[in-house]
Image 1: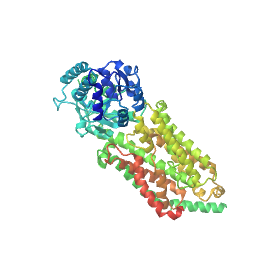
Image 2: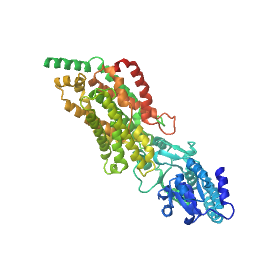
Image 3: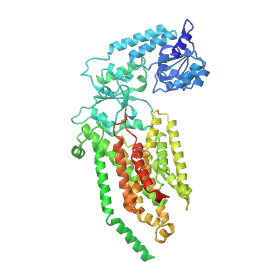
Image 4: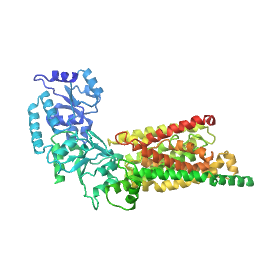
Amino acid sequence: MLALSLASTAVDGADHPARIVSMNLCTDSMLFELVDLERIASVSFLSRDPNLSVFSAEAKMIPINRGHAEEIVALEPDLVITDRTTLPFARRLLQKFGIPVMLFDHANDLVEYRGNLERLGAAIGVADRARKIVERIDALTKETPDQGAFVARPRALVYQPNGFMPGTRTLMSDLMTRAGYRNVAAELDFTFGGFLALESLLFLAPDAVVFSVRQNRQPSLADAQLSHPALRGFLAGGPERKRPLLVKVPENLWTCAGLFNGRAIEILQHAVQ
Amino acid sequence: MAVGSNASERQWERALTGPGAIPLYAGLSLLVALLFVASLCIGPVFISPLKLIDLLSGDHGDVLSLIAREIRLPRALLGLAVGGSLGLAGAALQGLLRNPLSEPGIIGVSGCAALGAVLAFYLGAAGAAHWILPASGIAGALLSVAAIYVLAGRNASILTIILAGVAINSLAGALTTLVLSLSPNPFATYEIFFWLLGSLSNRSFEHVALIAPFIVCGWLLLLTTGRALDALSLGEETATSLGIDLVRTRAQIIVGTALAVGSSVAVTGVVGFIGLVVPHLMRPLVGQRPGALLGASTLGGAALTLAADIGTRVPVVAGELRLGVVTALIGAPFFLHLVLRKRTVYQ
């Protein structure tokens, strides 16, 4: 609450914040969509990873931060934006230094992202640009309603390293549903997600398995699990078992909400046709 | 002397094959077999033992047979191999160092094996050839056993060995965490849990095949030291006078432990407590003889690990419990009970 009031005092009137810092991967990409590079004083270090962000090239041209209060204070920003859940201690320190901090809820679907865009746009004086992006998102959501012929839809699940499966209230689930799938997580009552044993995956027998892929991944056991012989055997199909669909969506296209989510929807739609 | 040696040899053999040993081994084998089958049946999806025979007898290509053949069978086999290795290595090390606390976990053998495997895996070397992962685990284990033996010296006190081991173990744990923290893959940090607490989940036949040759060699080396360990329990000089080649025995146990424990840890992470608890549980059953303890601890280690691994599948948390957590939960109360009961013996 304090953060909000502080933010509004700084952005009231025509005096819009000129130097904005973002501390979270997803507020980073929202900022990249909304304003020109000159107004961005710093973004989180994660945005430089091309596997996580479609704005990695832009992020390499501006300073990055690792969410430490002192590095952000040194940048002397007019406004700091971040996700409500990240780095509470750093945020509190920034407020002590009198730097306005604006908090956003993580957008778990395109409609929530729309709201975040409008709020940030109004706060930093780019309401027109925000409205244009919102119109394109509205066009995208109109083409791809999140409900439809329910029964005919293929049952799909996103299987991430370590067996993590995103639940129904997640961006991945929203995009998957808009692309015409039914998230198996609903059958398990996974709201935000949970860990799914490999054998449970086989037993659920989804029609489609979606992988979130990266390039040049460094080795990890989590990734090794995705090439387990049992999973390969399942994906290969069997004599009396239909071969399940394997869809690969680049991780940077659907980790955070943004216009680029449209490409993730396209990939998912293309696979099912 | 020769007469005495023969007499004591006969005595040992009688103790090994005489009444008591056969029922013990039969009982332990039966227990291991039951737990092995239970390990194949129990999981998120229950498979009845009858259905299991059908699933394992041929490839049906269906989902249940994939679960039984490609997920649960390798997992149970690894439980058997890894648990047996830890129990056996614990018994052998306790016999060699004549110290009830020396076991792969406490003296840092498992920790160093994990460090070796972690270095090979996360720096990408393990991708070059399959054998590099277990070989790195073995190298790490070998270094630590040799270091303990050198540090401890010929007549080191129990305290020296344990202190040296604890130091090596902490160092290995710290370096393992460091390597994982430095990995650019964001998932690597979470895998600290795997390497320090162990897990059998999602292992496959590739892992079984990878470590089987090393495990077999390690077990052969360790299981054949029984006679030497019995003699050693009477003191090094007496053992030498009984015709035991101590240099060879030491080398056998060091290399055998490194092979069995090093390769196990390379695919399952550090599973604690098995090597410590099992020999203590078995000791009263075999009559305080280090030689006979080897076989019993192998079976006991396999049984405890299989039981603990079944325990990890109890759906109390999202995902699975770590194996090291369950072995400690099962093992620690047993061990405490044993320590309290035998307080006088250890004083």
